[in-house]
Length: 259
DNA sequence: TCAGTTGTTTATAT
DNA sequence: AATATAAACAACTG
Image (cartoon, rainbow, N blue to C red; front, top):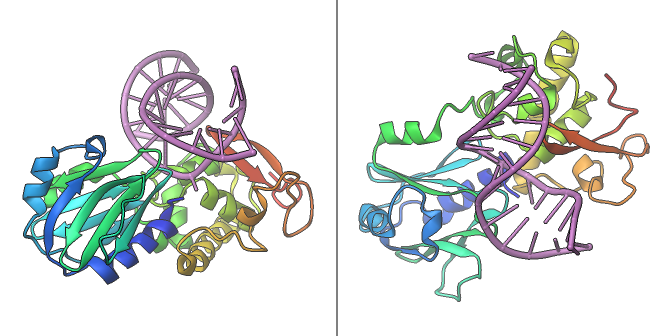
């Protein structure tokens, strides 16, 4: 699930339900998912602190607690759930933050991703690595800047978190489809007009996806059609193409999206 | 049984 | 430095 809009959804619910609460204790159900600390160390750092305002950069969620912070990445199947009552755990609950008044649960079926403890700002920065600007803040002008000088294919470049942060496989296919650009188009072949269209599609797709808290599987969206068996383009009805680009399955319309 | 999957990292080669 | 490719991580579905 988690691309930028999904993680933004997790951030919103964490802010709404968990922000400002006291942490009583942290229960680690799956030690392997706490990537850079023991359960004890995570618990000691968090217990007794008050959760601050959750922040998001790309697909990363930052949960501040006094000076420290927990960094969460959701891999392909992670999510964050708030439970006000002490209900039974879900099979895939991995880490539970017991707060005064409820629990924030990190759930992850496939166990890609995980949680990192950052004790200060410097450690936080180091752990997040060199991420590009958050995709939500990137408009056509900034996008042109970011792509200038790149020689790779457009799809893998947009998925490169160091170029800009937050876009995944579904989102990039959706954006390219909307901008009518082939996923295999080399970046240098895109002129100013196409780059502007790309920047506008990027903003529009993210803005529209945001209230859903995910990439919508709505009619009129590529994502709504891509799962079907003889999937057709929601715009022109052509049979959609499907092939690996940059190691991931790309779906595009051979008629709408030309080189 | 086997291919495929919303994400990253690492190694290797170019 | 950038780029392309493959494999690994992991667990489940069809």
